Every structure is written in structure tokens, then in C-alpha cells.
Length: 165
Image (cartoon, helix red, strand yellow):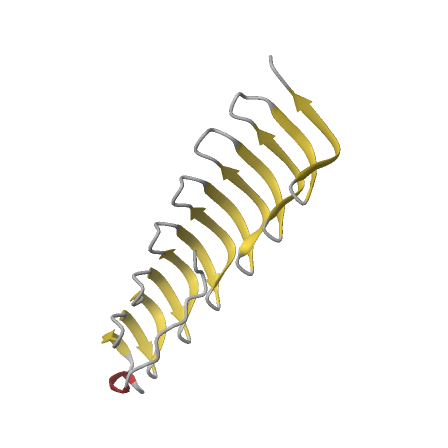
């Protein structure tokens, strides 16, 4: 999932414009929303020429604030963006059915969150720089679990492992 799409350049008809406007770009991209001095700023919808779609807030031509981004494979991120990158609270739904809900920092899972797989496995706990790291509970599809420390996605340190009851 591309979360930092390059924005198409403004066309001459939008230079200096303010208010709601629809802008068509040569490659097939379309922006519909608020402009301020010719820049995307406020609420809007951007369809990239690749087919990706973003609906939400813009600031100075970047996804900024609350929004939803969907790529062409069906991966979707909904949450907060800062300067075009997921940052803060959000939810990522993957095309394969996996789901992450929690904190983001500069586009990667960071802070407290939960991750679930379609087969029933799930993890709730800490993430650091996109990886399971810190304290958390991993539950297997059969109900067994490990609750304890994690280091770079590996069980680490003190913890409790419960199997087969």
C-alpha cells in the first residue's frame, strides 16, 4: 500500500483559485474539493491516475488530518495523516483480511495496537517501528496464548504461556 502518493501538479486553471473546485489532470487523476490560493487545502477527494483514492482533509497539497486512502489492491488505511503520512491513531485493512488498529508514527505501526489475522490469530500490545515490540499478548487460533515481553517480534523476557486446556 502506497501511503505517500505523489500528487499531480496543479494545472494552470487552478492557479490562485479558492473555494470548491474539480480539477482534471492529463494522466486521468481528479481532485474535487477545497482550494486555497490554488492549493488543495480543506476537505476533498483525490483519485490518482493509478486508481488509488483518498477522501479526507488536505493541507498545502498533502493528505493532512482525518482521511481514508484505498489502493488498487483493496488495502485501506483510515485515520490521521500528517504531511501525507499516517501518524496518530488509525486502522489498516489489508486485502488479505488482516487488520491493524492502533498507533502510527511516520507511516508505521507504533505505540499500542491490535493486529488480527483471518485464521483467528491476534496480537494486542505494543509496537515499535512497525514490529511487535514491548509487552503484549499473542493468541493462537486454538486459544493458546503468550502474554509477556517481545523484542523485534520474538518472545523475550518474562511472560506467561498457556497451552492446551
